[in-house]
Length: 158
Image 1 (cartoon, rainbow, N blue to C red):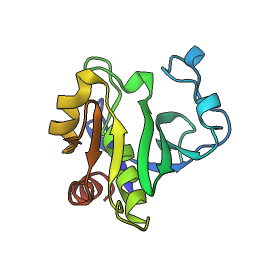
Image 2: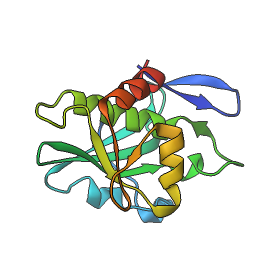
Image 3: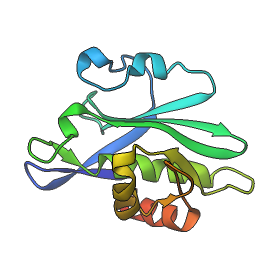
């Protein structure tokens, strides 16, 4: 079970994270990525976060890949109406998606079980460290270990 915060009412709203299917958002819809194309990439799996039972609106999307037994959070995007600090509709969308990636990693076997790696934009490195407990490895490459991942799961995926 996961919840995001409706900033208008200050209430938690039930959401679900499911495999991406159907109509996917594109750059024409105001998104930074063309998810219609990304969601069809071989060797990856895309997941959407949407309000449970009430809406088909996508609030965020995550693309995961596995390489060398390591889970890679390849792309994560929050819906345009959930960005910024002034007109943002929902909060906790990124946290829910990142926690979901951590939970998926715990289902894996091998040396990197519980670890999620990703490449951060340079201007977001400090934010990823402080907000999500990510560790910077080399350059823009970051990871979330199993201990931090469990904390994120407990915080965002009740």
